[in-house]
Length: 334
Image (cartoon, rainbow, N blue to C red; front, side):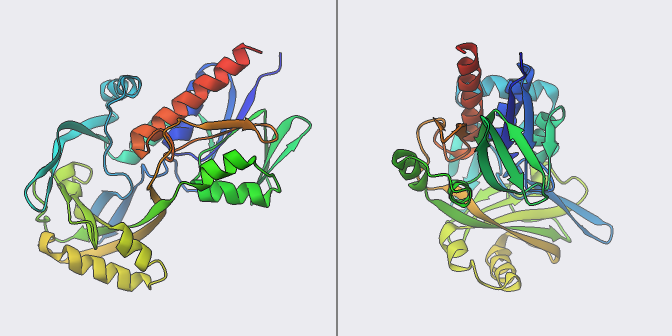
């Protein structure tokens, strides 16, 4: 019997969770990701200035685990030492506590480490940008800018939905009206995420995270107090959606200056180095309640990711697990 092959577009948590489950069941899985490393918004980076080295989680800051299925995975990750509890609740600038009593998890030593752990036994091709799909001879052909073509019996697309719809349009694949309307109805907030390497410790209070008013800044995290940057001082500063949307075309240096000035009350130190990243599709404003969308369009294709299952990190993980379960059940039924 021919081994079933699956091509997964996007190496974020949804794609990785699905890939792990499917590969464990004997399927041939290939994960394609346009980035240098896996993880999507489970993103971490380093900044250096002389002897100072800072590590930053510059995407998702933490995640919750409230669904029993996802919580079981998190327990395994805790036992493996790839995640830890950062805090139970996080402060705001007014002194109130958000998510009080709720465990907030992070990757160990950083959020990207969790993605790397999941990907360690998978076939992942990084820096591979998909540009079109074609259904030919009952097999998906996934074409990339590199010239490579990856065949698969099943296709799983986890990219932000506007990018996904653009890909299908470029591929001259017309989705049914209900599918196009469902996927096209999801709108996203952008988010500028600024990593600042500091000369001295920040003034962000314990345990290292701080929810702000929302505009111009929504969030700050002290990398050292968080535990991801033991060898250098630094903060991650994330802008609110309105500020980010307003400054999409603004010069990068000016955005850095504006965000640094707004963060000044909690810095308490000179800035040694900085790096700005734009998450153009950071947060789905209206994520779908369903875990995924599936159909023969014209071959079997799944749409999943953090726009499904209520959004956020947990939603992305549950989306990937639900896709894997559905795919395996469909194969079992023949």
